[in-house]
Image (cartoon, rainbow, N blue to C red; front, side, top):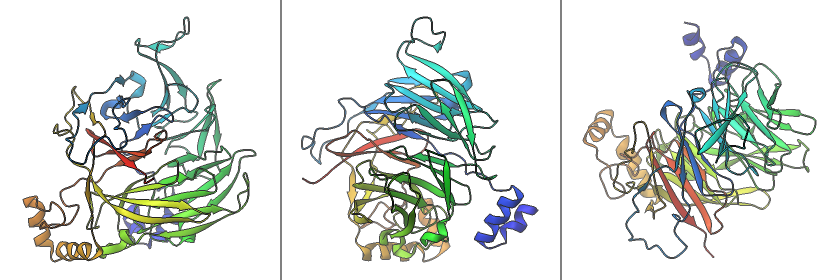
Length: 445
């Protein structure tokens, strides 16, 4: 009853009342993907707490050697599956920088810290011969749903919706220090590349930037950047110079950029809107839940990928942008990308509860002009009955078809860019628990 009454309030007032009454909750975790910072290793958290590691070594096509008409390679089987009795309900994964093949997996009441390879002699660590695990216990109860490493790899930040703020582990000693500035839990943690800042997002869309020398923080609200109807924070990504922070909200047709005006660790900054016409074209309005499903910004700050859902006429597709920071962040639309079949396998797993990942392949591009998006939006909005009939018939293959550009496509739940691909960017996308694909996006010379 109380939740129903709160739900009748305006969005901003409802969020404040929920925080005061303790009703606000972090959104359920999605299907995490994590690239290794220096090797083509992709970790995917699956059902039952399994974490599958796919090795793309030798699988990414060399620039110019794969034609657009080449068939996609067959699906790749995971090179390694990490599972343990302590790993039930795994909800987050993050590779350790400067730590070899070390993967942190957020689970109930702590973190499984996996080291791929044989354990040191006499270490007493849990191992099955191909990997060994160290348990990092959280100081509070609840599942660790977000993780972020300090760029030097000696500190690991994690958070649980069951406790306020977040905690930081000293990995060498295994001790965790709680950090908070109020009763709200942290739903998303992102450490800056320079290590001077840590973003901690809250369930209502607000966030804090912590400077990590004295652990002083500054609070920000999304409305200050012009995204008053944005909803929850889907993703936050730092620019390589630590002067720009990109934020995406699930119901907002524009992104928000936080620009730091002082040198680290200064917290002087301003929020600026980053309007993206393609997100609001064709009738998709602000405040529509599910408009932005997932976001990824490559580590070179040159490619931005946004998975679209909800009411957008290109729902199920990924919008790609060319971005520049000089010094204000700007974005230029490149086109829409729809993931094709994964090697003809349909994403079926090789083992019970397992996933398969497709090797890199040339994507199916669709160039959608504004007038075509408008036509698709008008057709989709012509009537609820017609929309239901089109959905039941499975129509809508793309431009030139009878449906919207993204009709019949499942929007990716997770997007991540490979950090170490020098020829451009490699985008990994996940649709459901058993569909993972990687797409090379080359930069023009």
